[in-house]
Amino acid sequence: MIIFCDFRKKESKEKLFKYLKTLENVYKLEIKRDKDKRSYSQNRYYHGVVVKMLGDELGNFPTEMHEILKSLFLQYDAVIGKTGEVVRVVKSTTELTTIEFEEYLEKCRIFALTNLGIRIPLPNECIEL
Image 1 (spheres, rainbow, N blue to C red):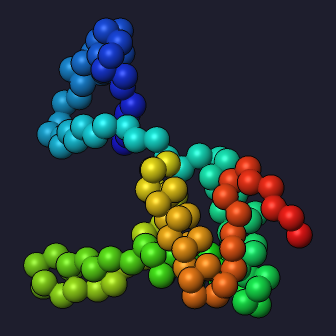
Image 2 (spheres, one colour; image 1 turned 180 degrees about the vertical axis):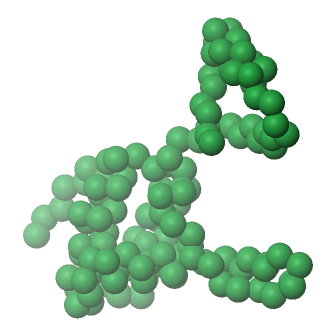
């Protein structure tokens, strides 16, 4: 179960503590700071401009282009439990904060320009066709 609590508000804290007192079993409680996930505007720009331009140029469907870009820039090594085996994992763009997503977009734009000669406009940038 995920519960969101704004610890800046006294009534939110009181409501959370009241709920916690009702629990009878043993639970593990994890508190994380809420991060701003990628924005709707960022997502629209990514799919409508970045993915579309690259997919059109390279002949890939949007879903394929999205997976290709993720595999290029969002891969990391993860260790499997106690075995110590290392596997490559591709992070989802939905997990990225607004800042991380902008860094990802910048990597996509740099890749397009340096490797493919495709200049992807910045968000809200008008270009002459």
